[in-house]
Each structure stands twice: as C-alpha cells, then as structure tokens.
Amino acid sequence: MLKKVRVDKWLWSVRIFKSRSMATDACKTGKVKINGVNLKPAYLLQREEVLEVRKNGFNLIFKVIDLLDKRVSATLAEPCYENLTPEEELNKYKDWFIGKAAPERREKGAGRPTKKERRVLDDFKDDQH
Image (cartoon, rainbow, N blue to C red; front, side):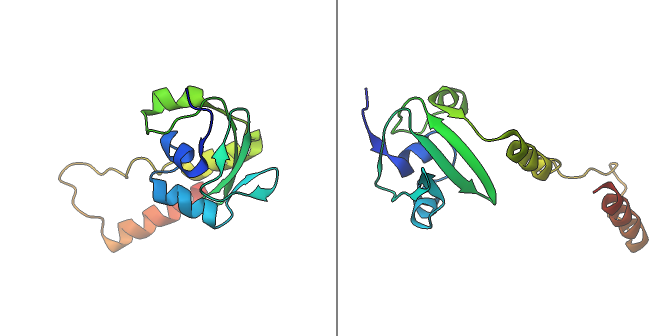
C-alpha cells in the first residue's frame, strides 16, 4: 500500500487530467493547490489531503481517499477521491458541458444546410442560450 505519491501522477491516474504531462503543466502553472499554496509536480501527496484544481476555468476541489500511481479505469478511480466541489461550481461546469458530447444530426440524404437554413439554425441556437 502506497504512503505517498507524486501529485501529478495521482491527478493523471484518477483521470482528472487526460495525460500526465497535462497534470504536470497544471502544477507548474499554479493551477493545483493545497490550502492556497501552489504545488510542484513532485509534491508527495498523502491520504486525506484536499486539493484545489483549476481546470478549464472551473475550480474543482478533491479530497484524496486512496493513492494510485498507475492509471486505472474511471470506475476504479472514483472511490479514490471525494469530490468536494461546491454545488454552484458543478452547475456551472454542467451548463458549459451540455450539448458538447454529441454533434448535431440531420436527416439522412438531406445534405448540408443552405445559407438560409444555416442562418435559421444559428438564430434558433442563439435564442436557446
């Protein structure tokens, strides 16, 4: 059982960042903190510590439950941390993320929209936001 692990390695292994280099860069640019103190990528993380992570303009807060040094699936990574992010920040993230997962669909054989159809679609989408 691990007693300490590098913070960049842990952030990558529990899938908060897509790559270890992204996690390292976040640490180097001051986007990962504990109690308001910027962490270096080599900081040795322990259980029960609370991390503040700034990712894509959102402030996320995680409590370390278990330590990992190898990347695992999302279902195995989930019990390794507790998400303490405030509700309004989670709502802001969900609002930003809605509609980004799937592209828009058109009927098969309808082809690309004309300029006029595109303007109507754009006006409709602007009204929705």
